[in-house]
Amino acid sequence: SFRRFHAHRVLCLAGDGVGGELLEATKLVLQATGVNFSFEDMDFGNACARQTGVPINEDHVRAVEEIGCVLKGPIDIHAGSASTQVELRGRRFSSANQALRKLFQLYANVRPAKYLEGTCSKFPGTDVVVVRENTEGMYTGEEVWESPDSVVATRRITRQGATRVATFAFEYARANGRKKVTAAHKANVLRKSDTLFLECCRQIASDFPEIEYTEQLCDSLLTGMVLHPQSWDIILCENLFGDLVSDLAAGLVGGLGLAPSALYGDSGVSIFEPAHGSAPDIAGQDRANPTSMLLSASRMLQHLGEHTASRALEEALAAVIKEGKHTTPDLGGTVGTQQMAAAIANRFATAW
Ligand code: ATP
Ligand code: MG
Image (cartoon, rainbow, N blue to C red; front, side, top):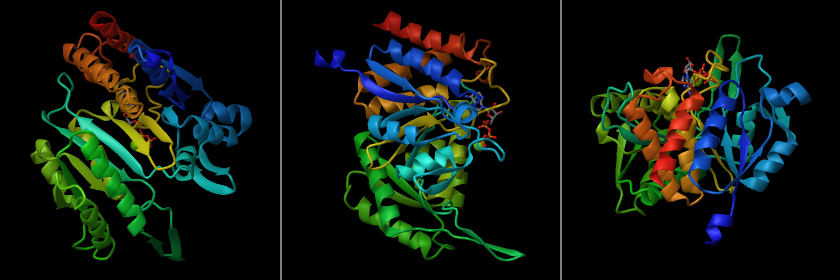
C-alpha cells in the first residue's frame, strides 16, 4: 500500500547526558515496528554548544518548523551549563527547552503514568494521564524584587490559556477513550485565579457530555492519588500543580526511568521526550532505562496515526519488563540500555 512507502519524517535531538543512549535504543525499537521513518539528527544542547557556543540556534527552529515531529532527549539545564540563557529571534529564554516550548506555544504537556507488571511500583491499577498547562500559571518567569527582603512571583491564569488546555484535555480524553477529566485547583485560597481556571474548565466540560468532569483540591488530590491510585483518569492542571502532580504520578508507577512526556500546541509542532533530566550520574554507562523515551515514542506513533505500531510497541515493552530477564538496573535487571531495547525489538521479529 501507499503507506508502506511513505516515510514519517522525525527530527531527532539527542540532547545531553543519557539522551544519546536513549535515542539509539528508541530508534532501534521504532525501526523494528516496520513503520517507515526518516530520522533527521541534529546536534542539540552541549553537543551543539561545543561547536557553535550555543545549545540551540536558528537552524533548529527552522528544522522544527519544517518537520513538526520531534523526538528529543533531555538537556542539561543546571546553572552554568551551556543551555542556560539563550537568545533566539530577538527573545531571551532560560534554556533551549524553554525556547522550543515558548516559540512553538507548546501549551499542553501530557505525562502518562501507567502501571507495568515487573516494575518496583507499589500501586497496581494506576493509569493516569496528567495534562499540564505549560505556558502560564506559576511558571511565567515573572518574579520581581520589591525590596531587598521581598519578591513577588506572578501566577498568571488567562481565559485563553485555561480554555485551550482544557479543550486539549477533553479532546485527548475523547480521542483516547478516556472516561473522566479531573481539574486540580486551589480555588479556596487562590480565589480569583483558580476560579477563572475552573470556570474555563467547566465551560469546555459542557461540550463533552460523555466525559465525566470532576474538580479536586490539589492537596487532597495528592493524598487521593496515593490512597486510591486507580480512581483517577485524566488530571488537568495549571503549570506548577501539573509539575508536582506528574512527578507524583511517575513515582506511583516506579520512577523517572518510566516517565514519558509529549508536548502539543496549535502550531503543528509536537515534541516527544522523557519527563526526566539528563541523568548525569549514569550517563555513558549504558544503564539508563529506555522506557521513558520508548513510551514517548509510542505517543509519537499515535500522533502519526500509527496506532497499531504504538500498541505493539507498548505490548512488547510490557512483556520484556514483566519477564524481567532483559531489563536495566533500575528495574532490578542486569542488562544495558541497548540490550533491553534489542530484547523489545526481537519481540516484533517473533510477533510478526
Ligand atoms: P533535571 O533538573 O534536569 O530535571 P534532575 O536533577 O531532576 O535533573 P534527573 O536527570 O531527572 O535529575 O535524574 C534523577 C534521578 O533519576 C537520577 O538518579 C537519575 O540517574 C535517575 N534517572 C533519570 N532518568 C533515568 C532513566 N532513564 N533510567 C534510569 N534512571 C534514571
Ligand atoms: Mg528533575
